[in-house]
Length: 338
Image 1 (cartoon, rainbow, N blue to C red):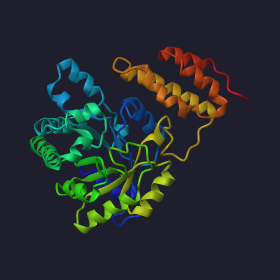
Image 2 (cartoon, helix red, strand yellow):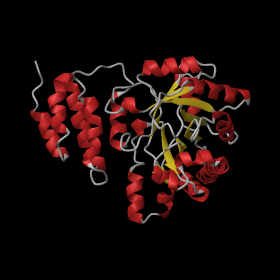
Image 3 (cartoon, rainbow, N blue to C red):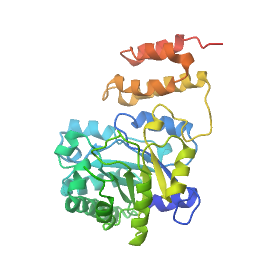
Image 4 (cartoon, one colour):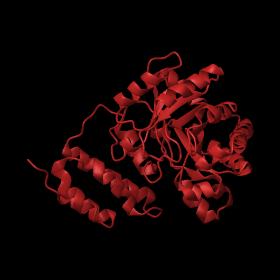
């Protein structure tokens, strides 16, 4: 698979003359890790694009061998998760170029550059949302990624993988009309726009009318870049409706997928199935990431897996657990209501 954006748009449809939007899983730190991505792929059948958690480009280049090994764990995936995009962050074009080569070698279908993360540690490096304030550097980073991809694919006799960018409407204020054309000038395969500014974080409702404006800006300059909207999507139906209203090419789903591997499926699990898949998720998390991440991360998922009022007691008990064995034991001993 080369430019999967084009290929998947033909399969699922897009606003570029097609009927249905492209759907993507948002890259969320300590949520869309290797364990949860696999669970989603197993229990959701609808075509979608998978994104990894973001990984530091500087870390992948400059860290010790042990440090690099840990970072690479965040980039592990199974074929069932494809098409899959590796998301990276950084502000050093040279390191971005080197990591782009690595991403190709790891077999990813695409590379995404984070230009929207509001985390202060990321921003202090001049990365994430900080790049909105430095369009010159942002463009250099996109170019560097493309150079790295082109160089290594030529050596390996492979097709180039596409580069996309995930960003926001602006930093302290909405500056879409100034910011988006800068990105489009570098011809990324897609620009994913979180319909809020960095200052707004997630404290206000996503402004999807601005996604519509982004499409208009793209069309006016005759760019072929896909515009993907992000923010406040509650369901697949909601995503499709938002894309229809804005003519966006697709939608990226974030918080609604937390603890909900059936999001992309029409299937509604019963209580027994919810507990079974939660146990599977816990076991997989321990197997894949137990030596890398705190078990407390799994608790983010408990609220949604166990959102049924009949499971409230179990949910509260699980929130107090300190490890996977204790959690699995609680679930195995829990008696479902008749």
